[in-house]
Image (cartoon, rainbow, N blue to C red; front, side, top):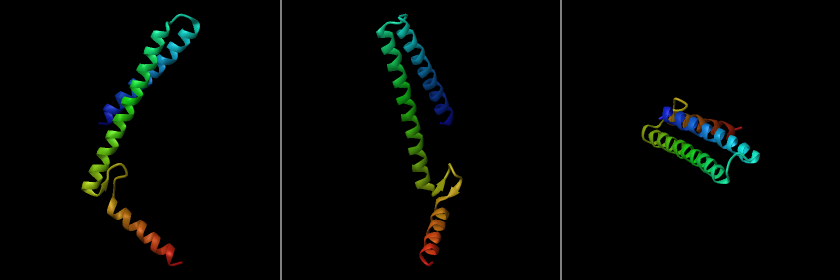
Length: 95
């Protein structure tokens, strides 16, 4: 999944670069309004695809963490982390 995110991110970066170039060409009078709109639309589409993929990835991680009680991004036990937080709250409240 990370490879796919990286690939979509690269496509997003290229679309943004192409949009900036198209904007400059339009300002210089060497690109039509239709072509500029196409570049802008392509850029927005690439951004949306990237965000949708990242959200899907994060949702999958959350589902996996809920099922396994393990945080795969931090590589820690969720249960142990919650116990530490509770212990800290108890210590803080007993001051």
